[in-house]
Amino acid sequence: MKKFASLALSLSLALTLAACGAGGSGDGQSGGESGAQAGVNTAQTITVQSLNGSGETVALEAPYDPQRIAILDMASLDILDALGVGDRVVGTADTSLDYLQSYITDDVANLGTIKEADLEAVMACQPDVIFIGGRLAGSYDALSEIAPVIYLATDTSVGVVESVRRNATTIASLFGMEDKVASLMDGFDSRIQALADFAADKTAIVGMVTSGSLNVLGNDGRCSLIGREVGFDNIGVDANISTSTHGNEASFEFVVEKDPDYVFVMDRDAAIQTEGAQLAQEVMENELIMGTRAYQDGQIIYLSHPAVWYTAEGGITALDLMLQDLENGLTA
Image 1 (cartoon, rainbow, N blue to C red):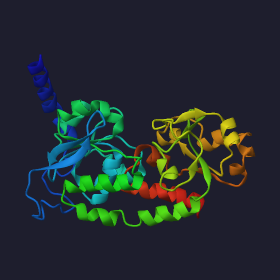
Image 2: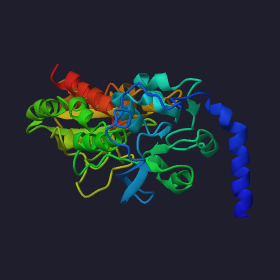
Image 3: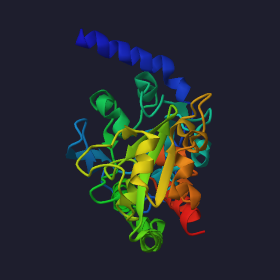
Image 4: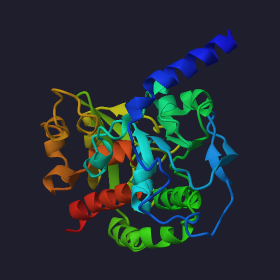
């Protein structure tokens, strides 16, 4: 049975390989000069720190200077793009992110979504390496049968900025480009500090609007940047309660009761382009919320790039846009 399955996969590969087109730089040339091209490192493989399907940190042997890259994680694509090696991407998950639309073309294979990979399409692209995020942890083993899988994530215990720095360094090491990371990260720490100075001694509720309801978020998952690094006192949830997936549903009376200085709102339906959904502002600005101090003082902040916060947190350009949302809402 196992031999038959392998034969079937091989036949599928032969039939669907053309779907990948030329994609990326299959001839081995790249717009960004890598360490291998510059003669810095002639090793064929490199060991990097990655997560496995169980979310455990492991040492992974990956190809050095990979030429064919499959992307199933937008934060990783964001970093590859910033490093200048995006022309090696031969297949990617679909995305609505404006700044990554150059990868949604006929020359780059559609590999499914960041939640559900098209394994046949991934295999047909013959990638040297595959990048995934947490939504595809359950597919880690299946994808690993095709190529080494690099699974990177945001670690809220060290913060978003440090996670981006670490993950960018990991990805850059595949190409001998570690020296580029410092310049790409330049300015983020000072911007965080300016926001932290503003946030000192201020309370907030961080919320996500989805399907007409408000979910509150803590400092252990999405939008943790607001409470952890920027430093608003997040009074929406008990520190011991997990909110890392979609938060905990809350009533508008809850917001009235807590009466925070600020309310930050991320519109999940806008992020995933839910057809016919109410805008977050329409949901939030009801009679109860309009009676709060935050509303009356103009301190309900709607995050302007919800798709970035929801699908690309951990990318370099994503971090810039997230900070812009806070800067424009708070200090402009």
